[in-house]
Structures are given as C-alpha cells and as structure tokens.
Image (cartoon, rainbow, N blue to C red; front, side, top):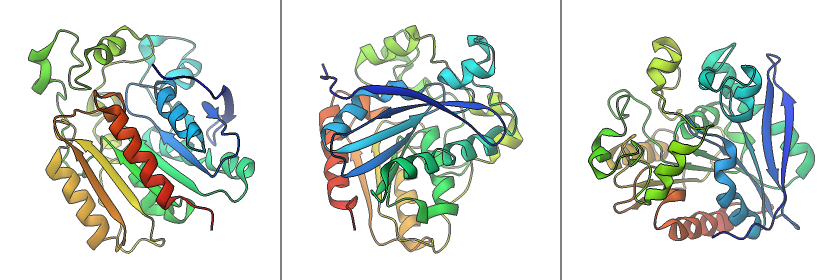
Length: 290
C-alpha cells in the first residue's frame, strides 16, 4: 500500500468556454520538476494518486485535471448527474484539448522555470500527442502510456474488453492482471464504460486521429510505455508511433518500453513498481533544470 506523503489540493479554473475545470495538485517539498497528467476516457485525475505520490517522493510536483465530462468537472457541468458523465459539452474534443492546455499557465506561474513533462494515458495520451504536435516547445519531456498510433488501422475503436473478457466477470479485465483494479473500476461511481465513437460522434472522434507532426519545432524527448497485451493499440501500433517520432518528427531521443503480459493500465499492473521505477528513472535523466 502506498504511503501518502503529499497533501492533495483540489482546485479549479474556468476554461475559455466558461466551463469550470477541476484539477488536483500535489506539491513536492523541494521540486526539481513538474509533471502534468492527462487521464484516460471514463476515469478521472484522482485515480493517479499512487503515481502522483511516487513522483512527489522523487521530487516532482504534479498537476492533473478532470477533463471535460469527467470526474468533478463532468459532475459540475451536468448538475451532479452521473449518467451524463462522458459528455464533453460545448466545443467537444477541441475544447477538451484546449482546456488541458489552459492549465499550463497556472503551472508555469506557480513553478517558475522548473522543467515540465506532459504525461498522457490512453485517451489522455492521444490528447497529449495532439498538443505536442502544435506546442512541443511548451514542454521539456513527453510520456505516453497505454497509447497508440492515431490511425483507424492501428487503434482499436471497438470493444477493448473482448480479448480478456473470459478471464473474469467485471468486464474490465483488459485494464490489468490485478483483479482488484477491474473490480474497483466497476464499483467507482465516477468511472464508466465508454466507446469514444458512440460518445463523441464520428466527426468529433476523428479529431483525435493524426500522426506525429513533421519536423517538430522542439526536439522533445519521448518515453512510450505499454503492456504487450494492451488492446487499445498494441505492440505494433506503439512501434510505429515511436518510429514516426524519430523519422517524421525528427526527434533524437525516443524510448519505447513494452511490458510482457501487462495490459492497458500499466500504473495499476502487477508489475507497477517496475513501471514506476522506469518512469521516474527516465524523468531523472531527461527533466532537468537547464
């Protein structure tokens, strides 16, 4: 069990469409850097408590918002109606991505010149890819977990649970080999099963697609971490993504780590300690004050 050492602060800001965005902050005592977390579809920022505590212990302050339609942001948008979670509100995907970026000035104002990494998981990793394509110079490092190459061919838009459904009864066996993770997801009133195409509609869902941009303005180091049994994209998809960052975006430092037999939520996997060590070890050598 993780030992909670950093106090979690719950805060808000109002995005450019007038939506109140709820976000969490964990402060390191003497921070050497900052990590901004973008969570996945059907979940919320507080599910990253253990990761945040690990990062704080290593010297990194952490910020993570509840995206549009999710967590406390979603409940605030829809008058506390849990059945409406997942609906992004005005501006859809575009405004959701923009709201993630609008947390950045707050982070910068509160942390001076400390280096900043963007860590996106699953849907959050697709959002992160989109942000980096346009604003690579806003961040000093990028971490993508449970991610995929953003094409219809290399990303599963169907039933992510199907492959592992025979292994249990929760319907969330695809998340982790740790059975308690799926059960907790099922029992959590703030998590929900979501099909992006059905939830957002075809037009808005297609806005998530794209390849790494050509010749990124900033040579940002990238770490990609996935489980070999991840059903969102899989090994080949992650390999193509890493290759495109090297050859298309002309990045010089791209690392791909594949965890044998691990599933989608690598930070909640049975080998989570290995994953944490890899993430923090990589940050320690790539996110440094210049």
